[in-house]
Image 1 (tube, helix red, strand yellow):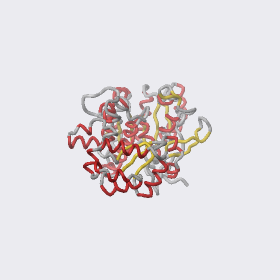
Image 2 (spheres, helix red, strand yellow):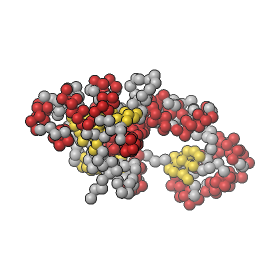
Image 3 (cartoon, rainbow, N blue to C red):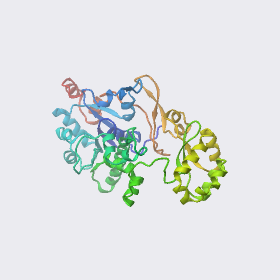
Image 4 (cartoon, one colour):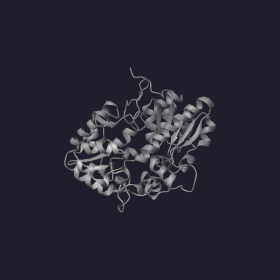
Length: 405
C-alpha cells in the first residue's frame, strides 16, 4: 500500500508559471499535498508550449512542464470572468495554501491579493515567489540569469580575465522553489500554534544570495576582494583542494593543506621528489608556491587515468571525485538506489521515461511520483462538483460560457 505523505490533507492552490513557482508546488505535491494548478482555459501554463530550450529540442515529450507539475491536478478557469473569480475565492475558503509567482498587477486584476484572500480565509498561507523580495527599489521582471547577475555569483565564476559565467541549469529558480516550499511548511507549522495564516515571500534574489552563502559570508567578514572575484585554478588558496586533469578526465581533489595529508598524497602519487622539494615543505610554503605546485601536480596527474588515481586515493583515505557528466550520473546506481532519479510512465509518449526524483527521503511518510503533469483542465469538473458542490447544470453553463475548459 502507498503510505500517506507528510503533507497528506493539505490543499494548495498553485497559480504559478514557468519554473520557480511550479517547482515549489511540485515539492509539496511529491510529499502528499493536494496541489491544484490553476490555469487559463486558453492554453494554460505557458510552459505547456516548451518543446525546446534556446532552439534545441529537449525530447519528444514535454519534460519541462510534465516533471515540475507532476502529482498535481489541473483546473482550467478564466479568472477574468466574475464566475471564475468566484470559483477561485470559494476554493481559497477550503484551502491551506495559495502559491503564486505572478505579477502584482495580475493578482490585483483577479482579486487574489493577500489582503483579499486573507479576509476570506484567515488560516491561509499565502506564498509569493517574487523576483527581488517584497521591499526595495527593484520592481522589474526577473529571470534566473538576470538575478544571478545582480548578486555577485556570475562575477565569482570562471578564470580571471575571462567573461563572467552564468551558473545555469535554472539553479536560482530551483533554489527559490525549494525555499518557498520550506517557507510554506514552516508557516503551516506555525499555524498549529497561532491558528492563523500569514504572507511569506521566497524571492529569486534571496534564494541566490543564500546559494552564494559560504563565499559571500567570507567577503562580508573580511572585505577581501579575493572572495568577490574569480580565482584561477593555478593560484588557489589551497593547491591541494583543486581541479586536476587525469589522462582521460578531470577530477576534484579535496586534501587539507596540512603536513600529514600532504605526505599521504605524495605517497599515492609516487611523488617522492615533490615531498622532498623545499619549496613545498610546509603549509605556508605550499600556499606561497601554489602556482608552481599546481603545475607539478598537473604533470603528475596526467600520467594515469582518473580511475587509477581514484583506486589509489580510496585506499589511502584521500577525498576526491572524478568530474562526470549527466550521462554518467544517469547510469549511476547511487542516484537510482536513493530515488534521486526515477522512472515514470508518460502518457504523452506511452512509455517509461527517466525523471529527476525525490531530494529528501522519509522512512515512514515517503514522497512519491504517481503521475506526471496533468492535461489542461482534466480535473476542473470534479473539483467543482466534489469540492465546491456545484451541480452539473451549473458546471455545464460555466463550460458553455468559456469560464472553464
